[in-house]
Amino acid sequence: MRKSIVSFLVMSVSILIQYQSLFAQQKTSLQKSYHNFFLIGTAINAPQIQGLDSKASTLITNEFNAVTPENIMKSEVIHPGWEVYNFSLADKMVEYAQAHQLKINGHTLIWHSQLPAFMKHMQSADSVRNFFVNHIETVAKRYDGKVFSWDVVNEALEEDGTLRKSIFLEKLGASYIAEAFQLAQKASPNAELYYNDYNIEQPKKRAGAIAIIKDLQAKGIRIDGVGIQGHWRYNKIPFKEIEQSIIEFSNLGVKVMFTELDLGVLPNPWDSDAADVNMKATYSAKMNPYMNGLPDSVQMKFTEGYESLFKLFIKHKNKISRVTFWGVHDGQSWLNGWPIKGRTNYPLLFDRNYQPKEAYFKVIALTK
Ligand code: XIL
Image (cartoon, rainbow, N blue to C red; front, side):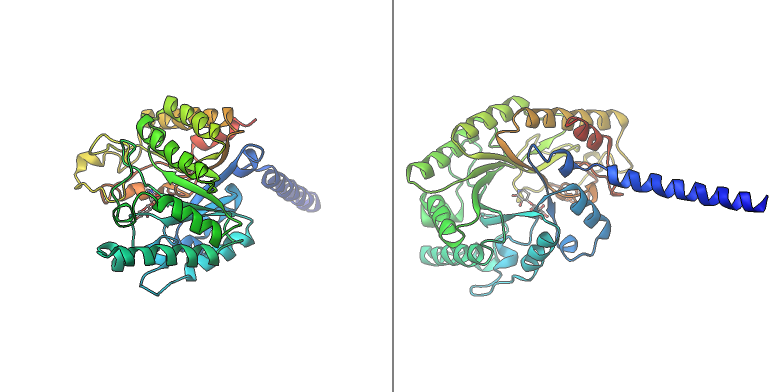
């Protein structure tokens, strides 16, 4: 009798183990599901690169095949003083990405935000030029062959499609964009070179991006792709403009990417989709309505938003080369702190407990 109980238990445990390993083998993931369509990326932060967030690490390596450093390659971090570069985190990221077969998109060489303190208020055009040339030459060269691609220029446009009045435009003139691409090409011949911006799906700003791309092409300067950031509100996704942009950009012969995707659920103080990191508003409880959880009605609409968006991406899969989420899970999202500090947002496919949401399963189901 005792013997048969023991053998029954042994049998049950072995069946359970077999079942679990079968489940593990069959376990699907975003990157596996989208393998034949486009790369699936995520932004990664310093603790994740340093291996200090093991739960995030499991998600990064299982679910994604591309990474963009959320902050550590920005000039304020990587180039903190005139002749001072700090490559430690970027080098670590390269090791991490190589160990896990993740393609790196370098973010970003030339951007008016998150500049090092020493050059923010620089008056002399010569000094700005020195910074500009040195920065691109040094950083792009070091990571040639290590990053798959670079966001060479980030956010050079105003909402009306004219060039942003940044320190680079003011001190170097409109040709700085072409010069940045030329310098990047020379320093990093093996990397794909992209222009990246928010709201360039909107007609006026899109026209500005098209003008930049055409100008580079007319000058014989290489540009491989254009990144639409994709910081949208869950209930105001501009589907029509997104589709039109995919078509128009792709008609120019460049790859189209969605590079910083998140669908915020919180009210925006200006009722706008601008994603300028310098915009700030003050906290009020009214602006933080879902501190204790997301109502089902919002969750449903959020899920529908992601589903429709990925349906559109799949429809144009031959024109899209990568879709990158701006963060691994909700707890990491910059939208908890921008444009108002201390809010609770829910913009990504994994929740604060690193668990997949319904939207995750819907996005995967679209590929079946
Ligand atoms: C954000 C980061 O996520 C934050 O951690 C940081 O404090 C500010 O920048 N557009 C971009 C990104 O190109 O680099 C920004 O990232 C979000 C908007």
